[in-house]
Image (spheres, one colour):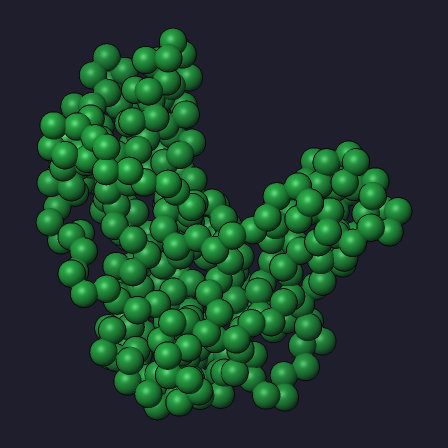
Length: 314
């Protein structure tokens, strides 16, 4: 039996929401003044922040009705705003496209190409932030439903090799979701007695055309797989998958330049102010849903109490 249609519809709806939000943000970025990038982008910061937050809220809001349809009501209702907040602040998504564009201009690239590079990062991180908010809401909602014992990764083509090799894998509710920039994979709740199965990496690979296989896995990789090589081994030999918690990528940070006199610090402060103080982070960190479940150590009632205490369900 294949995955329930609602789970497939849920994945497609999330992917569409992320793409729609990214397109709207991209349109705003495309209106910046090439002759005055910083000021013109700063003037649009609040609008872009609002678009991203609206997309995240819309994505997170689909979790409760979907899970209720799939598994019945939970021990509380998911709060979309909590999922949105935990997906991360908007300082980096707002300031980095500008930094990227100015950096490339300084290195001699054309202004048009430099602005395009900033647009690519902004679109990528917008998609990731929207998808992350939705997945956080999904995890909280599954933990709040005692009938759910695990989750399975839902991968739909087109997908990258890193996601394909994880297709159909089952995870404990305490395990974080592995994803990469622009990842639009979602989750499906698993209950005792469920017999449905998701497509395996091999079946997804076989659904691809030879051209798609070569494009995704490389000519040599596709040939190796066609000759019997393990798909996961081929992919992992080229690049691994890592757990990422912010902005769709694992980043190295530095305190250099973060003061009000530094380039990044001065611009970040401007964008924080333009986006509004409501995006400031609380001093006490909010636990991720999977961390809550791990700490509860199998005690579902305690997990639900922690979900309420951390604001995920009301």
